[in-house]
Length: 143
Image: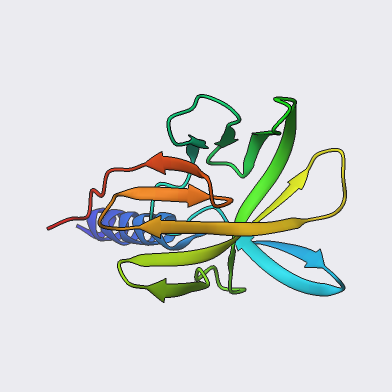
């Protein structure tokens, strides 16, 4: 009975820890520390392309890496994240059926972070990156 009790407690803490840990990375921009994460409660990773086109694309991997394609179709590896608090809570501005976040990325061949807009449009079920690149998503949390 004692070992069963210990097993239940261990299982509880393991599950609680796996759900509560959001990876947060500190970056510096213009001499100011900021925090980024890849976990905001929506499926951000994926491929973003301008509507009706196949290129230029941006690919965001779940681990915070990715590839951004320029207008001339050259590809650059990068690191990325969505601005959040030091605790990992995403920072956003709420709109009418939308939310707007600050998207940060840094090409691997640079030390400078660049910011752009990332927005989620809930009724359209679309995510927009850099204003024009878009990805559709499925909302699994709909009741």
